[in-house]
Length: 102
Image 1 (cartoon, rainbow, N blue to C red):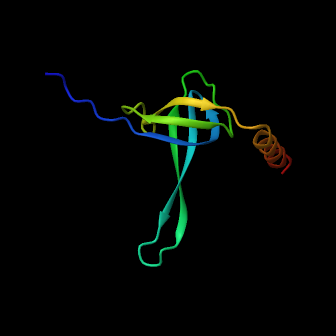
Image 2 (cartoon, one colour):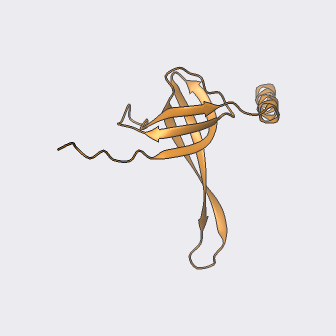
Image 3 (cartoon, helix red, strand yellow):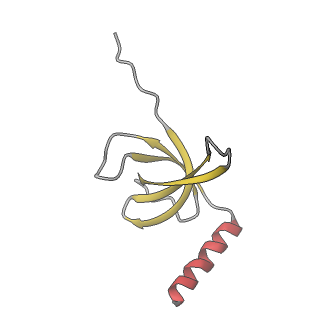
């Protein structure tokens, strides 16, 4: 009898940092509803994911999948990385320039 494999969780988010070697930080935003007041609000979680080829850059959309613990904080691995659009990339470059000027 074969062991039953657990379904791998997959999340999609935006890369917010790629400063670490072979590691990216992905911000995953979900929408929740308050049970009493029924107001919707956004909740953002940041996950560290293993990026073996270092192909993802800041602003790219990344799909990450759950895996065994790779380090103290990394439990996710990059499955797919699609580049950011031109407008997104331009805004990111302007933000980086503004941070460097200060």
